[in-house]
Length: 285
Image (tube, rainbow, N blue to C red):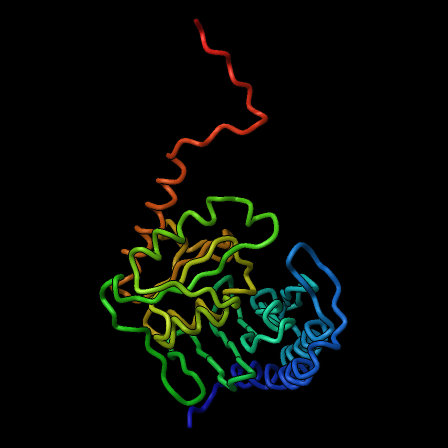
């Protein structure tokens, strides 16, 4: 049995307590009261209840830490070094449609760096956790990224936009290029679990644009501690601010990044068809 550190115990206990309510509500998903938060994005009573539980448990255990939650935003703490970054229900749309693929994501940031991460899948009872320099685990099993060396053999996860971002064709320009170069692309609907799957070797890589910090903070730590690489699309480390993320093992990270960048470059260089609003000059005789 893996012995968790005090900080991971705090995170795990909070996630397990919040998960009890999520599982209860998931069993009655048709009766949930749902309000529209934006196009294609919903917030449920289950989501808000899980957030309250997590906030209460994390604050009780570490009262001085700051908080960054998806629904309630940021709450500064008296301890200026530490901040919890939390998504109480990653995969809300899956949850509301009865699709059993969602998770709780908790990350601890210290002095601007993620030092601990936990992603809990309550349906499968899989708890992915890790700390900087101490490795990553799912339940009691050590995690390692896959060892595949060629994109042609790889399965890659992604997230596709919804609402207004989905109308930006640049967001979709990468998809056909990655599909053509790999064994397959999967869009599962929960970025935290996608990154945990990269850490577990289930996915060989993952990319997504315009994520939020709570979507990816814990997963970034898990991939690194499982021996993988994470970056933004230019190879930098602005993932939590830019929202663009690319993760893979050491063999596939550079080829996948190059493939994504080339697809975007080709899209931006391609001529655009004229729209109805553009003025067209008459042909000269």
